[in-house]
Amino acid sequence: MNEDGSGRVFQDLFDHAPCGYLVTSPDGTLERVNKTFTYWTGRSADELIGRPFSTLLAPGDVLYYETRYTALLHLHGEVREVGFTMRRSDGADLPTLVHAVVQQDEHGEPRAVRIVVLDATGRESQARDLLAARRDAEAAMTRLRVLEQASSSFATTTRPDELGEVLVRSAKSAFIAASAMLLLPSDDGRLRAVGEIGEDLATLLADGLESVAHNASSGLLEVADLEQAARISPDLYKALRRAHFEAFSMVPVRDDPRPPGVLVSLFERPRRLDHDARIVQTALAQQAGQVLARLRFQQELERRALFDQLTGLANRGVFQDRLDRVLHSSQSLSVAVVFIDLDGFKTVNDELGHRVGDRVLTEVGARLRSAVRDRDLVSRYGGDEFVVLLEDTDEHDALAIAERLRGVIAAPFELVPERYSISASVGVAMTHSPEPLSAGLAAVIRMADDAMYTAKRAGGDRVSVSRV
Image 1 (cartoon, rainbow, N blue to C red):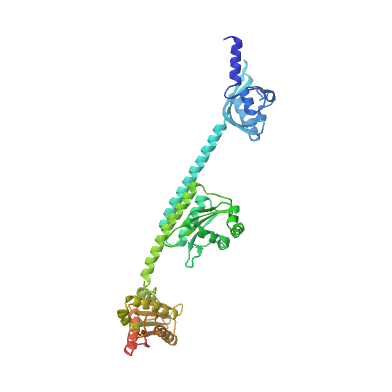
Image 2: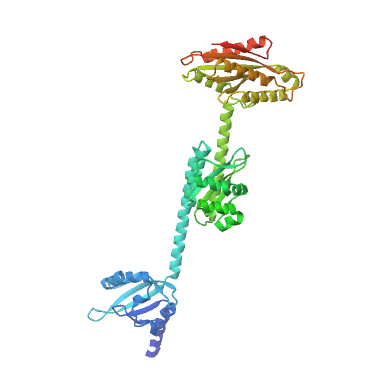
């Protein structure tokens, strides 16, 4: 190939290399550029030649170029893979990687600087993708740790308010929520927040959030911003604004067969949960539902251990424990035990059946509760026998209450025909002492029982008293 041909080939390689190729003076003034670089920057060779290389850089990179890059270049004679953001003629950023080598003359003095510029747009995109993937992985690990920690805490949770505390901590950590709360249905059908909440959350719940929470029973519900909240309800929008929240999410916490509760996560800025966050939120709610079911079961077991299943009254064990503590307390100076046995109940139960008999016992329990003071304890002692503990009462008041108990039982029962008669033989045992009562538990109950039998032997439907 002739010299002219070779020259054209080398010129073509220079101009159309897959990188920018520049030559600057030792002080950084551009002396030569290839066409690839002019294409990338959107500037012609005439615009570029004669201007300092630093004028092509984004403002944030100029300081590094002048203080660090030039010092390394002249110290080592080259620099490799220095990242610079250059500015195109239209103002757009051009991420680049720069390789520079100092060319020396025959005396070893810098004569020129040859620079190769690589387009790092793809590399920057990959870096952003890697960074995003890393952040996603870290978020996923955080959420996994939240689930693990929540599961560990759930195992030791013994009360609904403890469960609420675990869920609030978990929601704040997993979803970067500003606040959270667990809403559970109360007996009147309303949703109430478990545990203590601030005045702002209580107002938000009352002014709009509760009505929306009822709609979350079918699945995850998200309100991503105030505009969406306004479309749902003007009251909800106003309540969120007052409480300084802009978005929230809700997921049902199911404790079948009861109506579901709701886990609420609140955010101070517009927010929409991603797919993984929704999965974690649903998983938290499912675990919480299982914990609630366990707590309900435990509460039912405890209730059955303490209360009569038919009447709902305290059982014999609860009564005896309470009486024993009262007898040994210096705070109670006068105590009455009222022992009640139903007259005529056996005939009703035998002839009308156990279903009617059970209804009568349930009604008797309700009547007895309605006829005593709030602080008095009513208990089903066994069969058709009931006992009532009256603390801090004198004999006059105790007998008045005993007569009232006898009277409410003597009233007709709806399911019992008039030819059947149900009444009560009532025995009252009174104790008096300036010190902790010396009479034993068994002795007091026996005295009340003896007084009841005295009333029964006298024909029933009357009150008899015994004094310890």
